[in-house]
Length: 132
Image 1 (cartoon, rainbow, N blue to C red):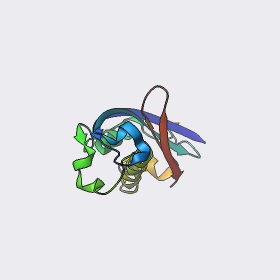
Image 2 (cartoon, helix red, strand yellow):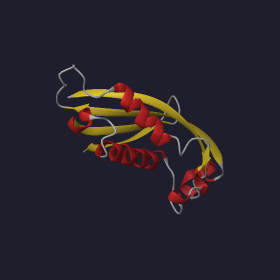
Image 3 (cartoon, rainbow, N blue to C red):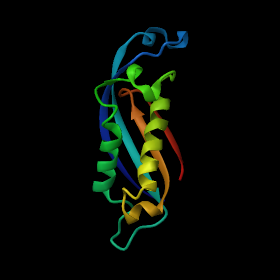
């Protein structure tokens, strides 16, 4: 498989209001480095798996509504625990929707798998990946 991976970041605030999260139950901030990897079985006639520029634009657009937000106050997350893994799936779903809507151009039709990884720190990360 071929892959193109692009990166951006978001700065958020949230709380994880369950005892299992210990001190993270309280309001805290996080800066997530977000990687999105687009996997294809082949390359196009230009030798591309996916247009990196379009992939970068889509990731930036998907992250924009989350950046500098308190996730606890966003209606879309009402009643949800916004863990790293949960956010990875949320971002995955929005990127997959953009792919279905043709936002990655003709190259988007060749994407077989997508992975979204959120780096919490230099020692911890979580992700969601699946076939499309």
